[in-house]
Image 1 (cartoon, rainbow, N blue to C red):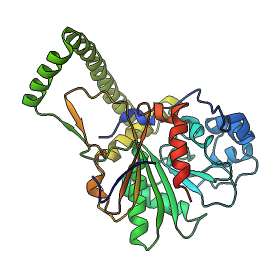
Image 2 (tube, rainbow, N blue to C red; image 1 turned 135 degrees about the horizontal axis):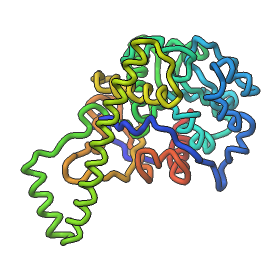
Image 3 (spheres, rainbow, N blue to C red; image 1 turned 90 degrees about the vertical axis):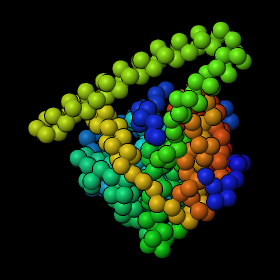
Length: 335
């Protein structure tokens, strides 16, 4: 079910943006078959608090406003799976995936972004991990634990596993969903890029130049997005400084901005932990960047690394039909 690497080997800003209109189908349960629980997840941003949300979700645990816990699927008596930090707008990253997991698998989310307050801890990976561990142990005091992190959430899940190890607890499942470790994506030196462009031109002919022009236009558009992101960061800073009310769109941007800052300041510490890395296979890096096959995690994992390839790109792997491939692999490793 995956490529095993014993003692095996930058963060995508787009990962925190919402996924919309995804539905389960085929032989698996659809959102409607999940029942009222899935239907009411759209109330997440309408409810004024986590406690208010709990009123919409029958049969699920009543969650405290001081906790980051969100019940995603009640399930049965199995050990719960915890999704960490990046859950998507309206749980959009989790809903399509959970629809393909076993119905008796309890699924919880841990995210400060669903709390009815400002960040309760410092915006660092280590502090967020410690806070989530405290919340998680309020409903599961002892391990082994099952942790999954989507994109930047994988960094926090990794740090949680390391901190849990330090206090004598075991993590049986650590699943990172297309999370790139610091240093996993690197720039190719200019000299190597020129020779690579020349080789591609000889192989693909004039069509390569046309494609390069298209990529150049996309590159300019990305530069404009970066410029807009920096302007929005200043706008956010003013709102926070003066305590001004924020729209839902600005709150969503604040979450992505905080994630970007926390990820940039984090350097993982190597730990002896078995890890499963779910890697999207559709990437368009061109010749300017080089991605480590294990997304940079090999030097931080000393307990074995298993890579599972998933069709589509960074966000598409979380949507049907590709998410079923991801869910099938995840089902095989869950306790």
